[in-house]
Length: 472
Ligand SMILES: *Cc1c(COP(=O)(O)O)cnc(C)c1O
Image (cartoon, rainbow, N blue to C red; front, side, top):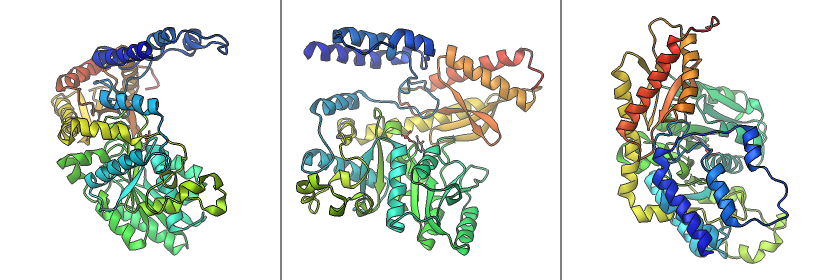
């Protein structure tokens, strides 16, 4: 055990010590992957040390490193070593965190961390929630809860409202839950990509007039695309007026509430019935860790508690404890679940809140620095300014058409991924792609931002200098 554990520890320390110097994104071909990794069923035992070597050589390097300081694509996951240690400890002790009887102490830790997160988000005393695998699961859990609390059963008249910038996981959740396409309204956004409240009001009123049942509005607290925050107070007012569940998808952005400026930007979020927050994004936790915060944890129990009539006979002894304590299997979908909160608890206590605030603030600062760099050059145009650690922009060229610029951009993005020191990708905004940086790694520096943009511009200029295809 000791030899194997020490070897694994060395590997992880080596990863943390060298991750800045490695390429941020490596992909191998399918045929390469098969050649290096595929084997027949293992009838014979292999020394685990050899397998660790194989993992170190073939698996861990050939990946996107979302914990790399210059990983600016998608949403980075800048992890910390303390939480990685917690993952090992939790799996080594294999705590069952499904109910109080089995994991009273770990359940208490989960309740405590949930209380901290609710407080930081400004939610009222008594708010709580549950840790889940990620934002997709949290959004699904929220929609089930909204439906069970507001309607008690599926109703084909129910309607869910979200903006055209809403994360795809919401649409997946609606599909899982059996919502038809005509049970969702995609509300347009304004010029700043925030949900249009007049359009939302009009949609709700039109549905009411048509005998539909407005169930839930999903508001964004930092969209994945641009960091846009929907007008949360106005959405909350509208939800209160029509008795509609307000869910805030803050999978990416809600963690910014740790900082004073994030808290100010997210003003109104605390009025939500439920909030999704992904600690495996801007709270520096290893995958998988998401959570759903709710104003009233009884709503979760109402949605997920399975009663005697549903034949959970083997849980009878456990259920007798439900009055005094919490059984997390009653707050969500999973029965067997790991003690997910321990890594966040350990790192929050070990580093303290000021370190987290500073680390989150660094995400804001890097994106703002990128904006200054981009504004200083005629080769760039800003599409959406730095907000919540995200900035989007385009290459500008005096003679190429927009279509040609887009084609050049796509090729430069590929070169950046294959040859570059940073991972920078694009997203669709409106009809056109835009380049995008998400700068939440606290080990990323302002110099990293400058050099990465300079390298990207070099690739763009080289591609723009080549003859362009006639179709563009
Ligand atoms: C990442 C993200 C999700 C999905 O979360 P996963 O943890 O990837 O399942 C949902 N909503 C938003 C806004 C996100 O950024």
